[in-house]
Structures are given as C-alpha cells and as structure tokens.
Image (tube, rainbow, N blue to C red; front, side):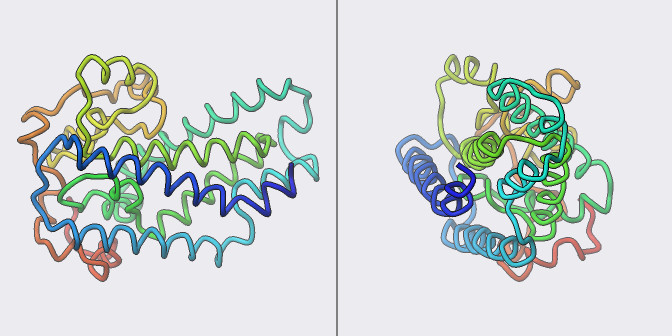
Length: 269
C-alpha cells in the first residue's frame, strides 16, 4: 500500500480532479445557478494556470506530499496512532474528521488575522464563483496550508490511506461547493446537513463582510453550526448577491500577474 500510494498518488489525484471537474463544469452548463458577469475565458485561464503552478510549486518545495509524510510517520512510529493501537477504521475516520476541522480552523484564522488574510484574499477577488474558483489560491497560502496539514498528520500518525482519501475529498468538495450549479432546495437542505453545498458556500463569497466572515467549512458542514459561523442564505439572494471584495472590483485582479501581487496590495478588503 505504501509504495502504491507514493508511486501512484499524482496520477490518482489528477484522475479524480479531472473527473470531478468535468462533471461540475458540465452541470454548470446544463443547470447554472447564476448568470456570470465577468469573462469566463479570462477567469478560467488565470484560475487553472495558478492551479497548475501551485501543483508544481508544492512538488518542488516539499520533498513529500501529505500522504508521503503519513507513510514516513508509519515507518518511523511517529504520532498517536503509531504509539497507541486503534482499529484502522476508527483511526481513519478520526483522521478525516480532525483534518477537516483543521482546514475549517485554518480558514477562520486566515480571515481573522491580517497577515494571513493578505494571502487568502486572492481567493476572494474572483468576481464570479464557479468550479475553477475552488482551486484559486495564492501559492504562498497553498504552501502554508500544506505545512499545517503535514504537522497534523505527523502528530496523529495518521493512516496513509485516510490521508489520501481526505486529500481527494477536500479537492472534490472544494470544486463541488464553489460550482455555479442549481440544486433543488429540498435536496440542498438534505445534503448540507452533512456536506457544504454550493448555495451554502456561495454566501462566503459575498461582498458583504458579515457574509464573507461566515460558512468557513470546505467539506463537512457541521463546524459552522457548532462554532456559530453558519449563515443560511445571502441577504440579497443568490441571483442578486455580489461576489468578491469591495476594493477589488477592477477586472485586472482576475488576471494572473495581479492575482500574484494581491498579498502585497495596500487595499485591505
């Protein structure tokens, strides 16, 4: 299993990415939730290019993936689950839940502290929200996030299969909940009892700060309810709400060079 995951991870993750991306992109065409207001070709080129660049940067700067760290932790008996025997299914479930809570907590911190917000706000400068927004993150944020996940995996001694599963789920649910897709209201209410839905996460991309600072979950929807950051619907409705940040309305911020320099901009929100 160890060798298989290390040797095949990049191809497996790419296959899942392409599969989920294709499904969500097709759904956006067949049943869109909102009309897009900015040029798709500019946004898609920039968002997908930064996604590709982030993948290369992680491979160059970090010698091992998060899954690879899990393999090394197992071989060297690092972490809780390597010191105390726990049934594999239980250890795997705990790993996925703890990592998801970690991502939620990280997301809240990245909104609340100015230094981290500078890195994260590039994600919010998109003036529309669709499947490509789910991978639109600044390279510095991606590297920092990887470091946080690596620390948690090492502390847990997390099973490599659970870590790989979480990484695939996080990637898939990020594309899903950023997608510009219509879901029946009843279906949405059932799904969001467990997972973050597109309507739930779209609120987080509202130009209104009180809505931007809500619905921080990426995968499991529980955390926002537990910690009081849940906001059910946007004040102006999904079709009329404005996406993005008040000080970043110029379409230049949709282009790759300006996306890269967002953390160094003097504008705050």
